[in-house]
Image (cartoon, rainbow, N blue to C red; front, side):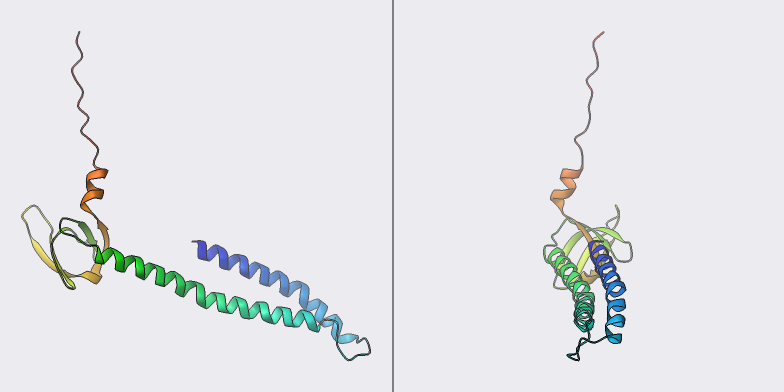
Length: 146
């Protein structure tokens, strides 16, 4: 979301620069000051530099975002432990029973059905501590005396 806002701001600045520098360049071609340089030639270089910066940012920012997401997923999979609740890319929910290299064995039901899946298929992990903290304490009301 932040990336889109940044890119849209950059594009807006580029559009404004293009609108205000192109007319200056066109006027500068018509008149020269005797030195042979046109008054608008400096703005052409500025416009060119800004376009190059925008192109570099358009390639660099998304790749940086992908690297962050990859690092986060890799950390999540490396911290996978027994009894963690997981969700796979195909929508299967289960509890981790065994972790070995790139293969994870999970239980998917009360009948203890076990499935072997590859680690890369895991998209979400809730650790045992997170599950315990999410479950609220039972609300037991004491009977009122009358």
